[in-house]
Structures are given as C-alpha cells and as structure tokens.
Amino acid sequence: MERRKALGLIAGGGAAAAASFTTLPAFGAEAGRAAGAAGQGKATGKGGYTFALDRNVERTPVRFENRYGITVAADLYVPKNARGRLPALALSGPFGAVKEQSSGLYANEFARRGYVALAFDPSFTGESGGRVRDVGSPEIFTEDFHAAVDFLGLQRFVDRERIGLQAVCGLSGMALTAAAADSRIKAVATASMYDMSRSISRGHEDFYTREQRRKIVDHVSRQRWIDAEQGTYARGSHEVPFDENGDVAPSDRVLPETLPADADPVTKSFFAYYRTERGYHPRSINSTTAWTATTPMSFFAYRQMTNIDMLAPRRALLVAGSEAHSLYYSQDVRKAAPETVDLVVVPGADHVDLYDRKDLIPFDRLDEFFTENLA
Image 1 (cartoon, rainbow, N blue to C red):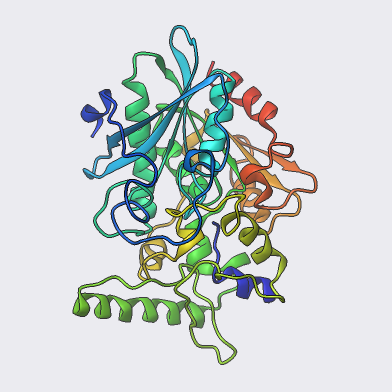
Image 2 (cartoon, helix red, strand yellow):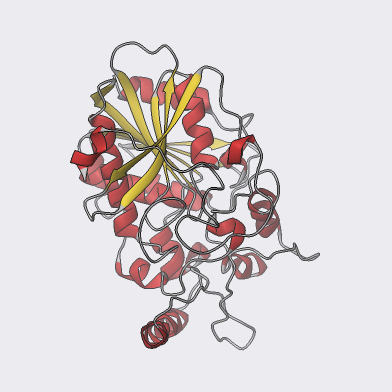
C-alpha cells in the first residue's frame, strides 16, 4: 500500500507545414517551461540536455503541426554524412518529461546507429504549443505521433516506407495506440511501458475500488467548476491518492522538492532522475510541478490499445525491467496480442533505469528489431 500511495503522486513519469525546419529559441531563451509556467531549479548541463550529443550525430530543432493545429516542438537527430533515404523513428516520453531528457537520449543513440530520429515534446508540454500548459490528453498525445510520422515522411532523406515509433514510459501506450490505427507505422518499440488511461482511472495494479473511482470523478468534476469560475487551471495529481480517511488527497507537485527520509523505493528512483542533475530539466512537469488537476477526466474517458489486434501483421517489442513496478503493463499487452507483441525483460533493471542507463537499455536488441521490421 505504501508503494500505491507513492504512485498517487507519480504515474510515470499540419502535415503541409512539416516540410521545412523552423529553428526554436535557444535553451533558456524563454522563462520556465515553454510558453507558460516558470520552472525552478538548476538547469542541466550539456546545453540544457541531460546527455551528450554523439559526435557522429547532427541535431536540429524543428517544429510541425498536428491535425488539431497545435505546433509540436521537436529535435531531429540525423547521422552525419548520411546518404540516401534512411529508416526513421519518432520518439517521445516519459509522461511529464521533455525531449531533452530520455526520448532525446534514445534518439541520439538511434541516430548514431544510422536512423533519422525525431524526439518531440507532446502538445501542451515543454516547448510545444497549446495555450493551457501541461494538459495531459491521451487522444492528442496519440495524434502527436501521427503528426510526427507526417513530418518524417516529408523529409527527402527519409524512406517513408520504413518509419517506426519508439516510446518511453507513459507515452508508450499512446505509441501503441497510434500504431494500431496507422499502417504507415511499420513497427513500434517501448521501454518501461505505461498504460496511462489504466493507471489514472484504476490506479497502480488496478487497486482503486469502484467507490474510489467515483470519488475521483466527483473530485475532478468539481475542479472543472472551480477552473471555469476562476478562469485558471489548477495543478493536481494525475493519479489521485487517498488519505487515511479515504478522502482524495491530491498534491500540486508530481515529486516533492526534497526527498523524505522514509520515501519508498519507487519514489526514490523517480526522484533520483527528475530531481537531480542526472535528469532534471526546468521544462519537465515531473521535475518542477504537476499536470492540470482536471487531466484525469480525459483518461477516464479514453481507453488506450483497445484495437491492439489491428497492429498485425506489424510487430511491437516491449522492453521492461525485471524489478520495475510497471512490468505488469507490458506483460498484459503481450498477453493481449501474443502473436504480434514480443517482450524483453531486462534482469535487475527497475522502471527508471530504462530512461537513461545505457548499460541496461538493450539498444542492440532494439536495433535488431527495427532493422528486421523496417526492412
């Protein structure tokens, strides 16, 4: 139950316009996270990224529009001295992270291996557009993957018949959902996969009772009235915890500013990434604040991966740590589509290890999977 209480605060972690690149402002040029709330804390090194750019890779800031007209900010990673049309990957995640963190690290590594890789901030987050900041939307985040494919397929150096997705943590469920609905996506891989609709509407390991789920719906519904009356958007837990009296007890931060002495192992692992030099970023929701308090409403309404059977004959590869609290998500997707989905369990790895531990992330296996399935 202590782990579940902690997870109440942490659940994870325009095609035509895409043909040309648009350079974004330099890191730090805008205050805070994108076009809105100010972040606090020390910015990471390496030019604002949590990892070093490989010397054989070029990185270009770009923008493209999704079909809702929202501008999506991304970094395009391309192998230096590349020739011909290359296979390409769109990448995003974790839920509440930005492209300068884990997804960028993955993109950098894939580009080093010969792929064009596009790491993007989901709508409303990071440097991407959306007037209300830090709104979580399973439908729009899924659309962002489709729009990323639009963008990649319009680049002259990309083979549009060899485009795949790689997602981390909470954006993995959106990537699988997008792939099932879009046959242009030839393969999809995930790391530390989370089903955010299931997580937010049912709790870790589905522990919410029906009464608790009703309390969350009532809580979020009341918050809609408050936001409408005040003309503002409050912050609050996206996976809502309960106190000892059985009442909802949301927080206005995903992670505490300082780590409590009695913190459980899951909180410690997230804190060690988002709140330290290892992975801190001032535009990351998980590093600095929380999602909008009404975010759970759309995740109660929108289930993910209901059409996972439509992925076939294309394939998915899920990677998860043997010690990850999230392992069951990948196992359940594998059970739902055993002929389509493969699962690789990394011995000794926890959930957050697969964000940036290159000694544990099986990049050789992922490269092999995409080489075979983007052939």
